[in-house]
Amino acid sequence: MNAILKHITAVPQSVTPDERARAAGHTGAVIWMSGLSGSGKSTLAMALQRELFRRGMSAYVLDGDNIRSRLNADLGFSAEDRTENLRRVAEVARLFADAGTIVISAFISPSEADRSRAREIVGPAFHDVHISAHLATCEARDVKGLYAKARDGIVREFTGISAPWEPPQTPDLVVDTMGHSLDASLSVLLHYVLRAVEPQDVPALKSVGAR
Amino acid sequence: MNAILKHITAVPQSVTPDERARAAGHTGAVIWMSGLSGSGKSTLAMALQRELFRRGMSAYVLDGDNIRSRLNADLGFSAEDRTENLRRVAEVARLFADAGTIVISAFISPSEADRSRAREIVGPAFHDVHISAHLATCEARDVKGLYAKARDGIVREFTGISAPWEPPQTPDLVVDTMGHSLDASLSVLLHYVLRAVEPQDVPALKSVGAR
Image 1 (spheres, rainbow over the protein chains, first blue to last red):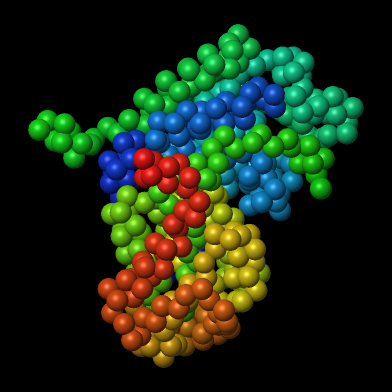
Image 2 (cartoon, rainbow over the protein chains, first blue to last red):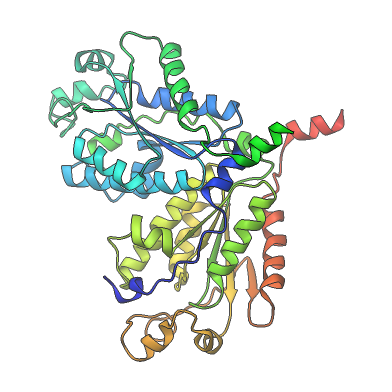
């Protein structure tokens, strides 16, 4: 370890996660959406963010749009770079959750190893949510035209076509976007998230309510 | 540019910064504290965070403690790695500010080039705040014992001793921690920040007030 790093003295955080949860009425959390391109991750992430905001909750979406072209602009799509991409996303998500925000991350996250590592980084606030649709369905949708390009070899290392996809074996929630409308999928997701971010131990609020 | 990246289709954010500012009563911002080790950055950052939280505002500190050992654990203290460290901090700070949070970053940030780049990354929400104390004062304080180690050559590339320090030429605010107590320094800083995060254009609130 670097000599300076070894000597960094931690100044304790001046606001604890409990205090933040009490003030906001909800805890921080990381809703880690995984799923094939075209499964509906981004659409659901944005809709969920909107619903949480409407309820006065702190929520923020991390996705390819605000991460890939900026913080992780130095990374490509090789297996190694994808792993580093998700490591950094998990670390950033952890900071947001520590700050009391419900982070909604929308990345394909094709490998079990990368998802496990993200869970390790974030800790108990991590929720593995599989946005599920068959490859054939996603390819038929092909919203961004990427599957056609992947089949033609124009886009390389594309998950499901030319790069492996390992479906989550033990997700915390599966949202099936093939058999359900956007509204129905959102409803399942919202129900799960609202329960997940309920503060477990909020004495200050309880005592106010008891008066 | 990578073929996949080129084809990423941006799904518009479902909550705008204006909506967030209206709901929170303040805008997001990046309070970028620069200054020598021992100038008081971390102490002031934590005290400022506490004061903003007490006022019901969303605030979060980024510092060596939560960044260097995690997101940027792969980086050392060479000039190149310090630049990359601050680039990533600026990108993360930008995300937090976009989410409506007042980010307080506390890194030495020794070079004018790195600070300029951070301002470019963040945009108008960036505030260059110089936490100012003479090298002799910081060295006399030597809270972490790092100056002694730097003089002995145990800690290398230490800003002010064995690595260059370029004081900000055009900071938005200078907080002189030599001539003032912590309370007085905090008061100057808080006054500045509260003004900086006032929403400039909040029609919804204005029309409510006018009724």
